[in-house]
Amino acid sequence: MRLKYLCQSLFSHLPDLSVGEEGIIRLLMSCLDDGDILDVKFDIGLRRYSLFGENTEAILSLIKTSLKWESLEQHKFWGLLGVELAVSGVRLEKLILNFFCSAEINDPSLCSTAVGGLLSICNSRAPTPELVGAVILLPNHVFQAFAAAVLSTWAHLNASLLFDSLAEFSEKHGSQNGESIFSNPTGVMVNHSAILWLLNYFDARGVNLSYVLGGS
Image (cartoon, rainbow, N blue to C red; front, side, top):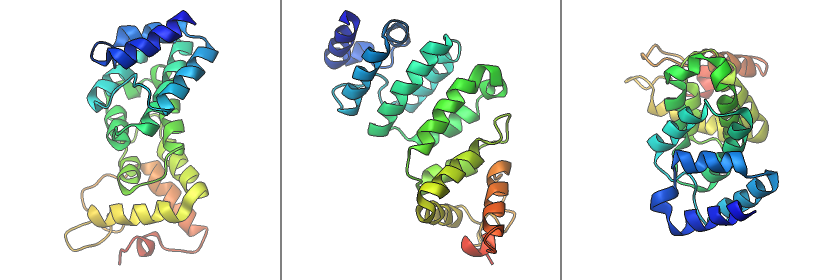
């Protein structure tokens, strides 16, 4: 309990010395119990203070460092990070792309908790052209089903917003003659699980994917 109040004071009054600092954050993850963690989530949601800041590169570095923490520490970390990302100005699409393009992603035993955390965060967000684009462009790796799982959740929650965002992304990144990246070889590598899910989704409804996204 005392550590929780110390956390509130430290991050509220000395943010330059505490926000995003690995040693302090890991100490909190190892010492705060579930009740304390919940109280910290409330504080973050109310924007009373920030634990992680809004520097995408610093957060990515902290995520990579957390991969070597104890499992319980990692789960607490992702619970808090998810709450903070929901109320901060961090570009989630940049964070996702950079993480999935890192070398660490090739070790599923090391990254499973982090990937699960990112999956939960994506599922809780409304799809935007930038975020949908990031998921569509994820490299093909050992967590192949990630992109398809996110798209499936978005389609269930808000299909019209998902496909409006997808069409806008396709238009922005299409070929010079205006064709969709899904119907024309533009040099853009689309995630395999994402394109397969999209094809199956529209095929089940008797709709051509390229037609929906503005292709010829």
